[in-house]
Structure formats: C-alpha cells, structure tokens
Length: 125
Image 1 (cartoon, helix red, strand yellow):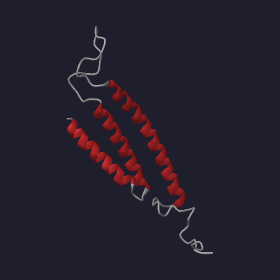
Image 2 (cartoon, rainbow, N blue to C red; image 1 turned 60 degrees about the vertical axis):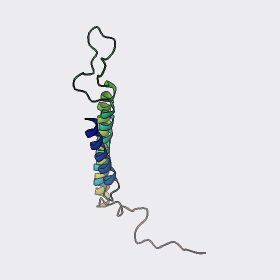
Image 3 (cartoon, rainbow, N blue to C red; image 1 turned 45 degrees about the vertical axis):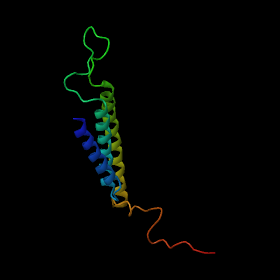
Image 4 (spheres, rainbow, N blue to C red; image 1 turned 90 degrees about the vertical axis):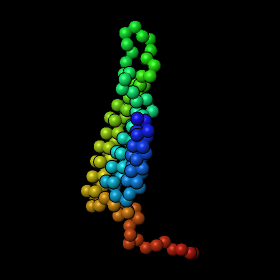
C-alpha cells in the first residue's frame, strides 16, 4: 500500500511544482494547496499504514502493540491541515485584492515597480 501512496505523493509534488511555476497567480495558489496536501500525505505514509492495529494503547499495556500505526504523524497532519487552510485563505484574499487593484492575475503584467513603457537606462557613460 505504501508504494501506491508513494506514487500518489510523487504525482502531487510534480503537479504542484508545475502549477507553482505558472505565470498566473490563481494557478500558483492551487499549486500551493496541492503541495500542502502532498506533504500531508507524505507524512501520513511515513507513519506506517495499518488498518489491523489502531494506534491506541489498550488496557493493561504500557506501550503501543507491535505493528501499530504511529499516532504522532496523524496528530501533526491534523495541525497542518488547519495551518494550510488558513494560509490558503490568506493567499486567496491577497490574490483577490491584487486582481482588484491591478485588473489581472498574470504576474508578468503585475509590474508596478517596472512599467513596460519605461525607457531603458543609459548603457554607457
């Protein structure tokens, strides 16, 4: 089962990198969301995938039974989901405000500091 999840993580990472390298900010935003999901799935896969033995310490035991899933990655993923959702909401708001102000989501056209019609600086003195 880990091999299937490893291929899925690789597909998520490659799709996320492809989208992040785009010129359009909405595609970048989707790439960041997919990247967060890829990292969460990677952490989840690293914590052992077992359905037979839950990560619960039974009555009379001092530690987890052998072969149980590690509960720490699951707790970390729950926290990461909340953080990535709030980060996505912030970036979505930032992207929307940039679109309202500039009228485009193309990053090549978002050049307030370097306008297109600006003359070239002198090449020699």
